[in-house]
Image (cartoon, rainbow, N blue to C red; front, side, top):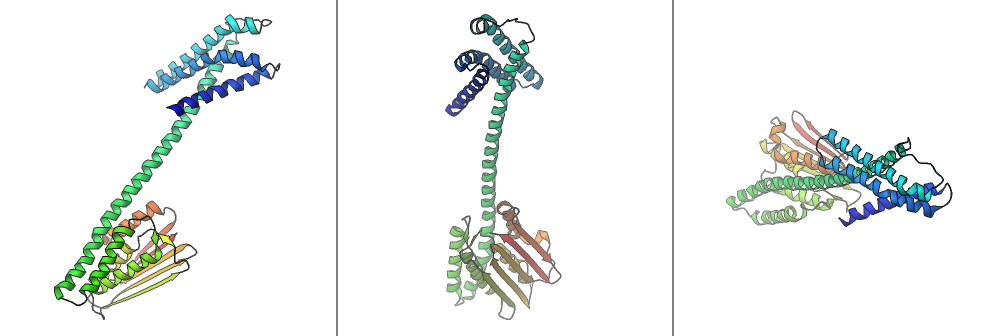
Length: 330
């Protein structure tokens, strides 16, 4: 409220000074014009705030503009009356004056100019405020949507990894304890690290290595071949945590359906602030967009929200191979 009052005071002070200074250029008497222009300001303010009231309170646009025009006319007439009664006789006695002369148009235009300038300034500041609010709402909506996407992804990931541990426990395997430790590391990462906007690329890669090791437990040594190649010229680069769903998709919707000769190839390269990720896997069944689940779809949505115009993701669904290629400016 205080800010609005000070803006109004600044506007009218500036308006008064510009008029007084402009007219004083004719004879150099700034004091005289400062006083006469100050006495004309109430009529201009009446026209301006009357126009504001009609435009903002009257819903029918035709009546609103008619009321604003009437306010301008009333302000111009009051200004004209002030000149006839006081300003011209006292400060400009050598001038002739007729109330209904064509010079009345100057007074009407004077009030219309004041109202139009003030209304333009108000609309500008109001538009700026609306844009700020929209930006805040858009940012909050994006944050809420990202959190919802992560909330969908985490139960999906936990379901798969806990199933692996359950299978080992039923077989009373000696590998149960190491697997439980890896799962604990993964859970710590998912619960604490992946909720951050950015994580180290090294951490994300280690997560993928642990995940691959857990997935390999479900396969015989001669049934699955996994290769993972990493190249990076910036080991401390940070990225948004979103690589896990791509790898998870290769196992869940690709090699898990195969009985033998399954393979997964993971290539991650970071060069000149460009992250290049290629994930390929063998498959025997046709993979449709409906069968991909929420993982890959969520990655697409997160990329749209966080890296709009800075990423390219390409999916190639061939007869025996499924390939995902992601390029990202980080």
